[in-house]
Image 1 (cartoon, rainbow, N blue to C red):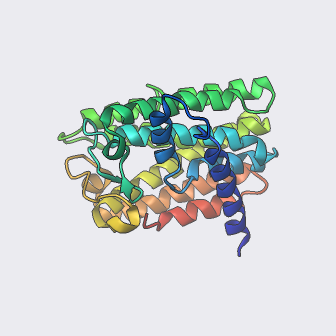
Image 2 (tube, rainbow, N blue to C red; image 1 turned 60 degrees about the vertical axis):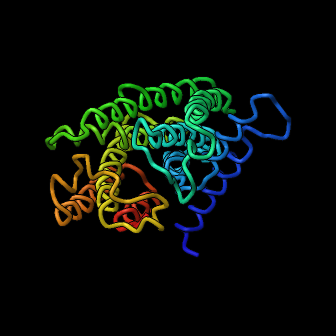
Length: 291
């Protein structure tokens, strides 16, 4: 097994183990249904890309990556809550996520809303309880809240909803995706640096990497919505037909080139990190992903 795959497996295993210990159902409680709904989506699989980035940026910035696990998993809780809400009939109205029925299809719409609310709240509890110096926890909570809120992911969701069935220009779509997709990736990378005690130069480089990686990731997502395999994706394709996407704006060929260009920008941003091989390979592997 390559060094990349070995490290990736270690990070994913650490995230899965941490997440698997959350919202334990061993003790019966009256509100157990919402805990079951939270665990259903949180443990439904996925690439765990955001926790991986948090752990690796912590290591690359000179820290102990184990310290970053709670923060990466807190971010995964926020990412999962956003997916639960995004799948609701009032949003994208999806029936499947990661090859399984979406949360509201199993638990009902009201419980799905509450499961998302529960995960969002639990994310900050998790970050606050991390066994690190208080200043580190506060810094990471600041990053997390800024990237997840109205000036980050939630703001991107608003632009996405308000842009439906409209012809949008490139500036609008780039802003939408920098908030909706890019903001949580930026949180992942910057929290890793913050956990390691990295300086402003490292933080800036991590943010630039996240910005370009997020753009490449979203463009590839738009391409997969057109030409992807629903079975591999674990969700329906063609769901963005009523939206202005990068594919509708630029076309498939140009999007393929843009994914490569933004990936190269992400890799170039890593120059300040002495050991950047893992992050560079991760970016390259996302270029041609099929799910």
